[in-house]
Image 1: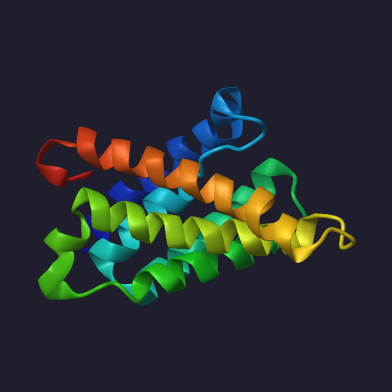
Image 2: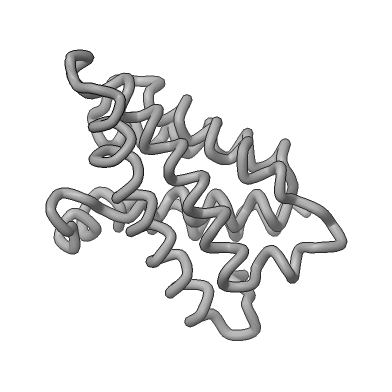
Length: 161
């Protein structure tokens, strides 16, 4: 079991580096996909809600450290996103949850929650809730779910590790 965690950790670190360095280059009108959320959803659907929630807290903290964000913002939002994805975990339905449509819907929901909580704490409080939902949460969540679907489609036998 511990070998699997090391494998996931070895995948999360390059994803973190890609998220901070190369992903902003493929932004569409300042909307970027969140690779960390995609991997968190995959990990949570594979290992369970508790493991995913802890991984969300750790990876959010690492993201805050390396990105220069205020400590705790990404930690909180990624923890809540992984916790939400954990509601879809079922040992008997892992394969069906990793199907392209199910996976991208779970990624969409988790990315929406992550972007919403990130937006609440980082943006100016004078913006309206409609702006927060559409501009800061919905569009990045759609972009993240499309990238997540492309990643799942491109994986051989639907396995990351």
